[in-house]
Length: 171
Image (tube, rainbow, N blue to C red; front, side, top):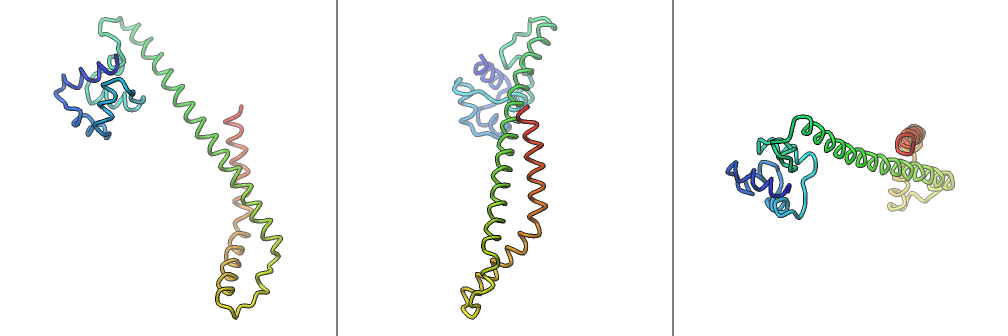
């Protein structure tokens, strides 16, 4: 139904698949897949399609014009509810990914801090007359100097981020 409506509306506007694809910023194959029913556009793309083809989303989705206004509003609200549910799931998924990235970063920061504690500045006793050791020692010392100064701030920020994303994603 959707695929036929897209094709019919595109042809009635006198657009080729290429022209419609350019207006939607997709490749022609995407439009072809929609029209053959092999895939469907997401909610944002449906809105863009309705604007370009100058027809309501509800008509694209298969509703007929003869339906009463209350039926139209009910159907649109049901479809918007489905779209909102999909967007909420995607947002929740992104929040969970961010939550785990913060946890891994927090553990990584603690690990690096523990490594610096175990090294206890041993690189300072290296033979700096050897150019390779001198460069390595300076790089390690520079990294340690920067790391120790930003470590508390980043650790606190990560801890707060973990708490905030945990509350939101796992109620």
